[in-house]
Length: 158
Image (tube, rainbow, N blue to C red; front, side, top):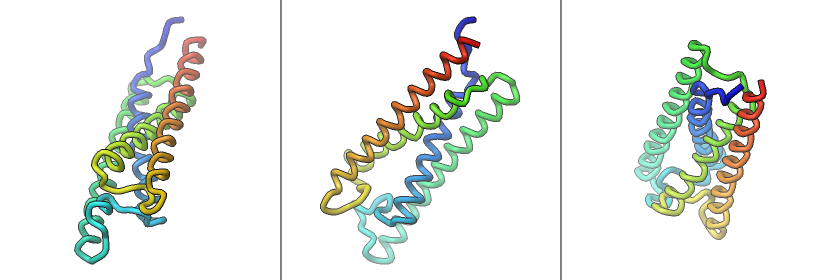
């Protein structure tokens, strides 16, 4: 049997991974650990006004994460209704891992390095933390790509 199309499973999984990766970043680093806010390197939250501005942009960040997750769910639902989605756990989990990895890598590259909006953990070893975040994106992306290949190979065989 030839290569079966993914029916939108990869797009849905990648968007879910990007959105959920954003939620993990925001919840863990912004809220629980309170290591940084969206603009904390440009506008340190040292007074009430700066805290409010950072909180506003953290909220926009979470809104984008939510919308990305919702679009991923909508694509997943559409594929289920059409009956076009392959029933492949490795492809779906792989796509979500790839999405999370893409989020970590590009958010780290753009926000941490290119624009310097914030760092994972500001201070003495901020570059090491930022590099670790980039590496986590590459690892998640690599694991995701491997799982997608495994799922495709299994799909072709069935």
